[in-house]
Length: 255
Image 1: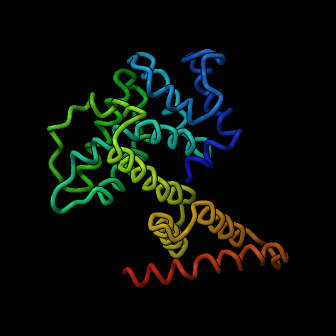
Image 2: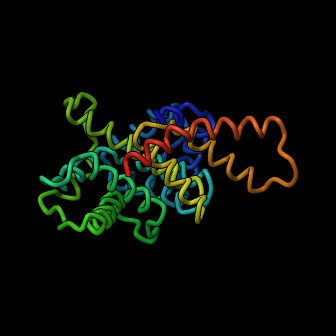
Image 3: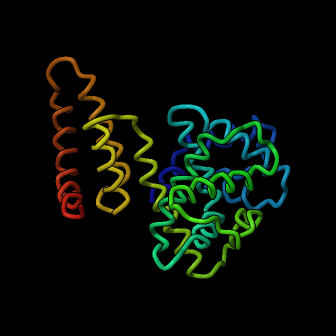
């Protein structure tokens, strides 16, 4: 799973812990070493001031550019999975299933995490979910889910939650993987279509996230090369084509 890879990277752990410490949210000795445990710890503390401070610290990073901004946004998405489950469930209808709505919810939350107005420094979690709700309802063309209280959307599900809740959270996490691919490059034309294909492949389980990122890297490398390709570059290009062939065939068949 992509989140497991993020957590396994020691550099990611150090970056997120450093952001929290720099913001004065907590002392180094008070924070778990593992990123997965750190995110769970941040979300589990029922303190509005504390939540505002650490969320603003990450939202500030997420508003930047590059991999660090993507990491900050990814952590925010992960921390707010329980709220996204409730938001997704509130928008289900006879014509919309969980998987379809979840994909929109995750994508919208990711966008909100990258563009949130940092001047809004109070009730940050509720405001993030509110912005996500507004964006989701515009995307779906739906009425807002008035039966759901925004304060409840931020509640973290208990570790021993029921099976349905765990499955719902897993689906939401899977949906975030395609968003990660789409954010690896800003490409137009044929290259933009390639990124769309990669995102589709990851979203449908036809392509591993790291493979998709590698393909984007190969595309950039080919665009920037001056002169003949090295044997190693030709090998990377051949491997990327081998990965893409079955994905492209499935994509055409599904169209």
